[in-house]
Length: 191
Figure (tube, one colour):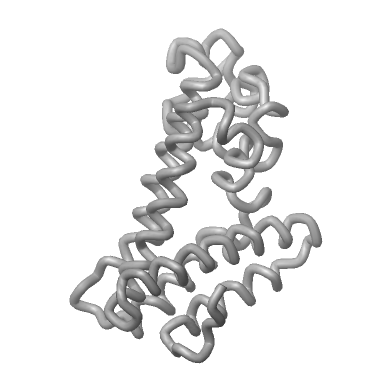
């Protein structure tokens, strides 16, 4: 007997399985089973695996805004406070999540092959970069802040990948410390 499952539970399960197993290694049957549904029942909610993936990624972007990105745009709080708070929120968001970065993983696997998925993955990377630019522009100007933000996003996502490969979160923890140090101009080395 199957249980009543809501859309949010399906999206949470799909995001988790895509993050941990990858897009191609996650079947609609896997997602349905994780929700206690029959495979065909998922098609009442989503017409395809691709549509389900896009919805799960969209929801994850919204969750990332609610938990992390909003901090960068608190204009009544000085950047010297927002940047460490932002880095701490990144740590809370990613540490302890099996599989690392959903967007990094899915983006590497199918980002260029499935346009609707690529669009959401690109939005995530653009959003995190823009948040870091917002934190750094007053101190460094928009061009320099953009360079630093691009390097920071690469460092964060790369460290999440290494943390998974090495089973060692210290890579990510160091990246967060480096991000916190961005407001100290001498802590950033030009690319």
